[in-house]
Length: 199
Length: 288
Image (cartoon, rainbow over all chains, first blue to last red; front, side, top):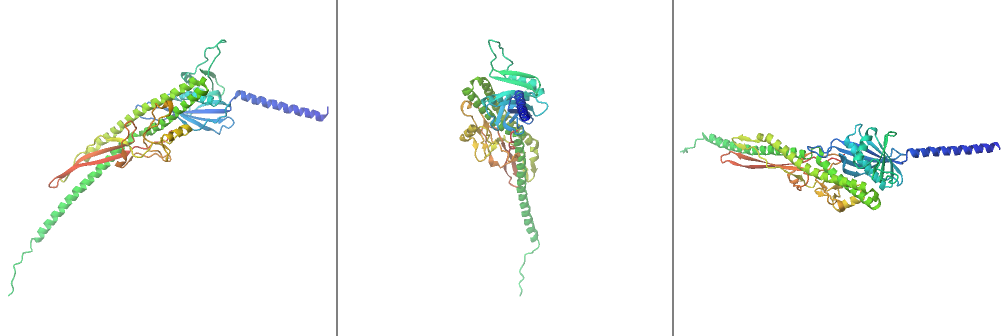
């Protein structure tokens, strides 16, 4: 075999190897991060809302919901604000449309304005998760994962259970698990995980 | 022959003239003094009435509670509309999600019920606190306005029950919410929006269409912020005060002070002075 042919074959092999490597990396990335968009829910307790004697609406928690493509985290688009009292929604303001391409995967990310979120914020976050999951479903987007701050992981899961999300319902070989919504939750980026179901 | 006519003695004429003149002067001064006293007392009472009205008006929207309620009512409306819209789409295209959509819709409707109950509570609380503030202000200072002079007397003023209403021609503090095109069109068609300013109108019950028509979303008159600047509580002209619908939040007060006034000039003159004090609550802030 001539030297030119050998070099040509080696080049081809080199290119093919790189293609496989890149694809593997891409595939691995797609497996570890199977979503194209992040919907971020930030909770904040409002200090000065409905401050009067005998108020039944204090405190109010505001959830500010934005979304962005994973490839462009800086370009955050506002979706809506929802106001809660003790986990019950009392107001909503739609700020824009959920312009996520149907079929794209979504991750929901919970954030808190302060380092010491309140019980009202956990409740609000749990309810907002359910609302976004429903909106995503209507927009033909699957929710791959819900990431929670480490300290909020257990409280928010507990609140989701209070709002009728359940652990794995009884199932066996003859009666497979059936749910309409699966909620995969994770603490941080590599913490414990939990799956809840909405029947 | 020169006839000497007997001439009147000029001596003593000046005394009479001066006496008459001085008496006239003194009488005029007393009259002027009386009118001045009446005018002075009127001004004092007007200032007092304004202060009383302002104390009540400031209490109405203390810490922007009325503005916040108005804002939340509008947003509660969007919450119910959004939840109903989602529920109907689920029922049509995604019936397997019915349980979740139904749960979220019920929550939204419950929120609207709770908010309406709270609005009524706030209405009564604000009226009570405003009345208490005005009564306290009045009682603490009314005795200072009594006058007891030989030529002018004014009694301690009295104050009938204040009126608590709203300011004429002031719409609500809520800018029209966008985000739902159909709801926006509906609101415009129903006349809920003051088109010039894009503010929701005052004294409306902005009911939703369809199945949620049973819910109440009562929006009240309150000055809107102008370029994010909130108008302070302020004294206003008496003729711009109007009564508010019974079930609405209130944003203005009007009080009346009455005082008996008497001047003691020979035949005593007197009557009752009535002074109106009118003030508007501070305007609403933007929603946090």
